[in-house]
Amino acid sequence: MTNDIILETRNLTKHYGGVHALQGANFTLRKGEHVAIMGDNGAGKSTFVRQITGVEQRTRGDVIFDGKPVFFENPMDARNAGIETVFQTLALADQLDVPDNLFLGRELVKFKFGPFSILDYKAMRERTMGALEKTGVKIPNIRGTIERMSGGQRQCVAIARTATFHSKLTIMDEPTAALGVQETAQVENIIRTLKEAGEPLILISHNMRQVMDLCDRIVVFRRGRICANLDIKNNDITGEDVVAYITGAKTQPEYADAA
Image 1 (cartoon, rainbow, N blue to C red):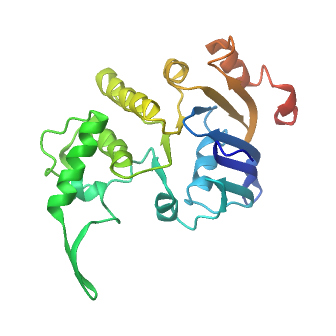
Image 2 (image 1 turned 90 degrees about the vertical axis):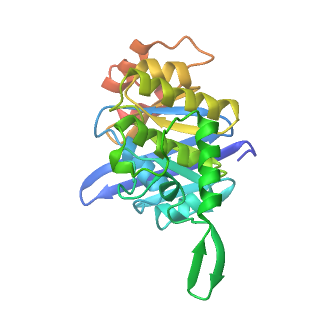
């Protein structure tokens, strides 16, 4: 494995009883690369991400992250290793404000006396403002609770959380599925900012225009298997080609067993 690969999966497989939700996924992501994962509902996209991020435990296979084999027992293990994930469910605490959500589970401590700690709220607010500025997210009142925010603001808070910490990999699962045009543009600008900073990204999306504009490659899943790996920056790949792989009209020869 070369030094520029940040993530690799080998024969990654997940079975739910007799259901083979993910079968033999071999995947690589290089440092600085933005890769889209596409496929119909139930194709295995989200299952793949859940195995990488410790949400679920894989049936078999290997995950190599930043040059080392890893086995995350939970999402916090993945975050501590440097993987920040924006799930469709956002995983935000509605009753808490923006700084509390950004630092949830990783609070900054001013003093610690045995089992008791005094949190450094000032430092968390300052770092929150820095993260929002870095990503271009505009939240009028960061002390307001998440439940009072719009869907777009909530999504942007979840994405800004990735900028608060030094992450080695960002994963976004349908980050703009429920957003309007203006809010979608804001999220896409954040993705471009990550690209300019050289930070690798995995983007799960059904938005063809978005994927073609923002990503270097498309990995297509069908029936729990990878069926295509498309270099959209160096080849004449069209949206129609991608749809053909998604529907099964086309399969790359090396993935013929996914048909």
